[in-house]
Length: 447
Image (cartoon, rainbow, N blue to C red; front, side, top):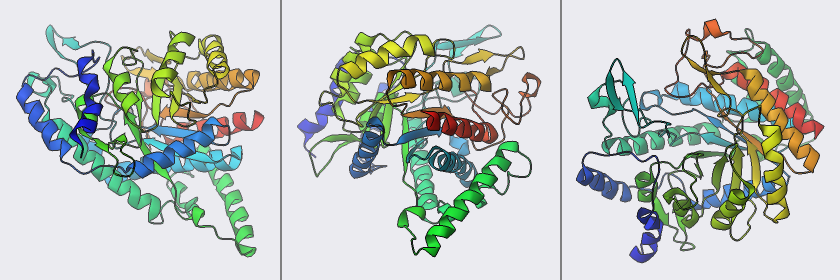
């Protein structure tokens, strides 16, 4: 590896980096980074290029992006059941959107690297004791003790290992027959009897079956039905980890962050003169940027200049997280100005992060109706402007948690305590995720 080119992935080090852990032992961190730099890639540059091409189709209005997964992954949840349940939920949502929305769906998980979280405050105080805030399993522990809350660079190696295990299993599921479209019923077996959304899905699965039987009878049995393209993404938050996994592609000489196919920059770290934008500008992966309600058109255009100077469809995804009450006011100007500039970005709705509130019980939660209303607003804005609503980005789990209120199989505020399992933000459960997929498919068809 050419050391000079590789140094190009470290230009961020001279700039202010928001939301970085404060490690007590700088030498221990350097040792871990040196070790990570010797590890093999988690994904390949060619796969990142393929995703960029798929997202190019989304940017041109020819496909739809489904991006979803945990708010923050946990080291103790890298079991086959948890990973399969997440994947199964995304496959079911993908089937609903493809069939009911009549659109090719690009499937990207918030998976195999989503172990770090930005936080609004650096410390947390309980009963007069102040400790560093929990920043995700890659940084420190959830338990409220000085030992657990002290940032530990060894956790970056555990993040790599957990991500490798997860990706290994995802690849096995998506290419080994589990993702075969003839499995549409099997993905639903544990679910259909108890849930309205499961029953609705089962009806759709029967229609898919009939369509496939018809094609089979005509002698058509495409390979595409037997496997699924599935990509991994996460927030590129802890820059020491991301740059340690940045490699020069032997085919092209370009830098790729091989910790995931796509990485995004959060609302709290997208400072135009900051380290995260500088880091992202140097790598060839598809890049996402979260845009909150305070984003100005000038900021959006500057982000395009910095991250997509070649104006390459599929390179840059703008993930809008405005809140249901602001989306219809704040989004139109951004979309108009960006479209007028000639840039072809992917526009995606994150209807989760702008709609969080605290219930009387003290649980952070979201109303399913607010999530849905933000997606509706997103579609309305694009329809009015004649632009393409490119996708949704949701925090979800394949488990029957009780973290967001509402949905067809309704969860009430009084139910939140029953299975509130997230370490950070509230996620849609499987039933709510399927409800959302059906509703989004209807909105897409109406475009």
